[in-house]
Image 1 (tube, rainbow, N blue to C red):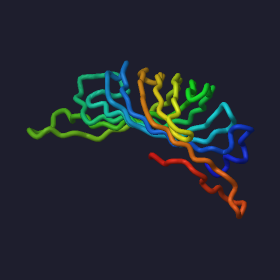
Image 2: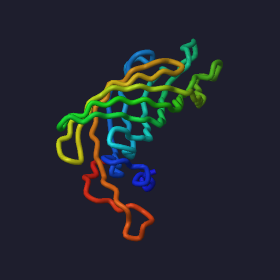
Image 3: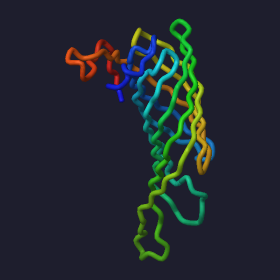
Image 4: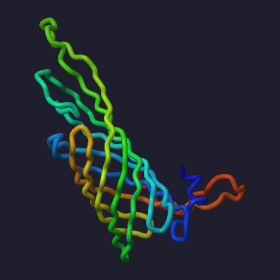
Amino acid sequence: MLAAGPLFAEEGGNGTGEFPNFTGMAFGGADAHRTVGGSAGIWLSRYTMALLEASVIPMGSATLLPRGPVKIRGSDLFNFNFVLQARVGVERWEPCGVLGTGVLMNSYRTEIPGASAAVAYQDNRHSKFGLEGEAGVRYYVAERWGVRVEYRYTSSAIDFNRILGGVSDQLQMAPSRFGTAPDVIGGNNLC
């Protein structure tokens, strides 16, 4: 994806790749839980970027499915997304919005009813489709890296919200001297 960026870049896009990391809190239908994740993207133009994201929310005894009488433990929600981000830069500040789609994979363990004295658990996993929207702002501390704060809403089997903060780093991509792959110019890789 990063190698193809210069082919699609418009004026101002310059084939710049970006690697944001984030952490925060998820709340709503999934109760309140911490979250952590990261993404990799390429600026398609001066105002738009395409990103692939992955994050995890340790949910304890909650799942994407309705709660029932079965005891659940060790629930983790993995979120894999493809998103498009639009931005408008004002000096060092950059307000942005995101629309995306993804797959939510929930892995957890359920208690097996009628098990012997030692409690037995069974591993389970299910996946759901989700849609996401986000609004946020980024502040560039230096030319190629900055900090960001954002609010994200996810609609799926259960709807939930996330408030996230993170660091993003940009890498400038340029055509290779051999014309086949990009070379990295500058950038501080904080990932």
